[in-house]
Structure formats: structure tokens, C-alpha cells
Image (cartoon, rainbow, N blue to C red):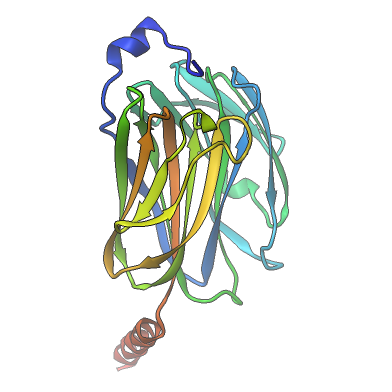
Length: 268
């Protein structure tokens, strides 16, 4: 069994009820990237190297988060990122035996580079993720959103689904990225659906041992959009989802006309 079960964990285990909640959303000449790494050790420590590439020269970081998690609760975790001690962090979200940690590293991400991270404390640390949202004048108008938290699925070795909502969006072609830990090929067949359309899966540890990152093209609809993850017996934890869209031309035109009208009213 890949997960170490303590008495306390067994007492609180049950059907997954949590979800990922909106943490960040912005619109402008922006883009986002979600990176993931497997821990390898599956123990109390993890060394990670995040390779950030493809950003325009001079891009400015708007928001960046470093993530970690565990399945057997230890009260806190410590992290070092880009040679900077981030200190202790308490779990910011929990779901049954799945506990998650997050550090704001916005001021430490400065363009394309290799960013090293060392995380210590969590028991059964399977992986870590880095979410970065940046801006540059050459980028098209876009919207980027990050939902994060703790969503444990399949802890009873049954088929189980969980979802998260992205609300307040303009329609257009987009990209969905999800990061999970604890997944492996032993019980395969996981799926990721976007507005009831299958867009990805399975989750078989594509980053290495027990951690996966999927990047999927999606068609974003106006208003609310639902991401649903289903596991068929694999016990895993879902921590982050990033969605980004470049609005359809008609929508962009409407936004431009609205901005022009506002400018004219201000001058009047």
C-alpha cells in the first residue's frame, strides 16, 4: 500500500467533500504556467528544480505560489526557494488525510531560470508545484485563474469524482493545467472533464513516482466552467488547477469598445 495509514488518519477518512477554491484571477496582457516535480523520496523532505522558460525578456511576475502536500499530518512544513528561507507554514487546506501547504514566492520569481526548492516536514511528500502568472506588453489580452486547496479522491478504493468551479469567464480557447500527487499506474483510468467533456487522463505519475501534471486544451464558455476529476480506485490528492483563456475576437472587440467609452466619459 503506497499510503501509510495512521490511526488518526483512519478515524477521519471518508468520502472526499472538499474542493479547490479560487485563489487568483486576473485579466490583461498576461499568461500563466504551472510546473510540477515529483519528490522521489516520498518521505519528509524533497529537493525540487523548476525550469521556468519561454517568458518574454522583461516579463514581470504578477503572482507566484510554491505548493506542497502530505497524506499523514505533521503540524507544519518549512521551505527554501531560490536560496531564500520561507519559514514555517501551516496547512492552508485539508480534506480527510490530505493536507496542503502554499508559500507566496512572487518576489522571488524573476523571468526564465532554474528555481530550486527544498521542502521539509510533510510526511509522504510526493511532489511540489510552482504556479506563475506574468505580464508583458507583447502578450495578447487574456485571463488567468488559479484554484487551489485540498481534494482527496479514491481513499476507499472506489470510483469517486470531485470538481472545482471557475466563474466569471469570457468565452474562448484556453488551456487547463492540473497537478496531483499520490497517483500511480497501479489503479489507472482517471479522467479529467471540462464542462462534461473529457479532456485528459489518466493520472499515472507522469512526473515520476506518484505525481502528475496534465496540460489540456479546452473550450471555455461564458460564465461558469466546471473541472471534474474522476478516479477509479487510485487514491490521490488534487491540489492545483490553472485555467487561462484568450477571449474570442468579438469579445475582445466589445471589451475594447467598453474601455474606449469609459475613457470618453472620463474626458467629458
